[in-house]
Image (cartoon, rainbow, N blue to C red; front, top):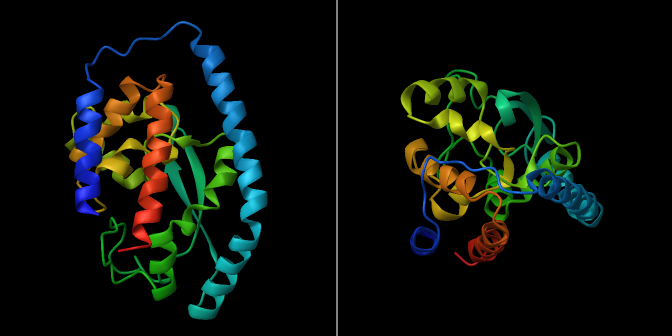
Length: 221
């Protein structure tokens, strides 16, 4: 997987350049409407098609660990607005009871055996299609973070606040160009590059393509 991330990062850096001049293109409002309408329709269709798989996820979680199958948490979205994100629970119920908020990492012992399968196949993200339908998120964009970490990274990582210029997404450029254990600085590099080129259709579909490859590759390693 590390080679996969490195190849994607190299290809993206060679194709797209970055500057802090965030221009507003002509017909921006029209494009945003088209994207929002299209993503809402796609999310609704995917929720319908994925409903059997989602039911199996619920059963699997119930059979392998105690607690609710659906996990909800406050995240920070566009313009700093808080919203509730939905996921299938992949961790133990007491995961942060003693430690408080902690970022997850590869081989995180707090993740259940079935939760590890959900994460590897990205099935745990399926409930976020609802977030796309109601407009909290898009299919593509920087991953939304918890208020605790947003506050921390705003103070520690220069330009971190710029992530809030766009709607967060289920997948993003950082997710296909960085490993799971990458730090906020490395991920921010690619988030800002996405924001710079957020109106580029080639960037949008390239992220979706890389995401599909990532999911397929994860099943073979």
